[in-house]
Length: 69
Image (cartoon, rainbow, N blue to C red; front, side, top):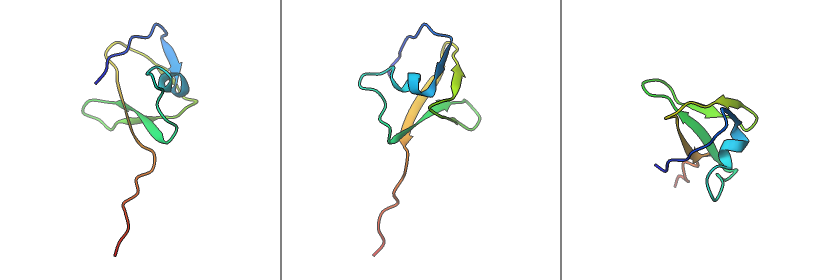
């Protein structure tokens, strides 16, 4: 829920990962929050056209459901 300001109109997924300090870890996926639709996973080499108010979030890249007994 942290707000960041960037001055580029386009950034790659890798560039977006480097906006926060510390950067988003490689073991996490970067997602674009799309209201009322499916969220979009951003690939590192994907170019994103930025607009005011866009929201991104991260999630574990691999979810381990745990062990069964």
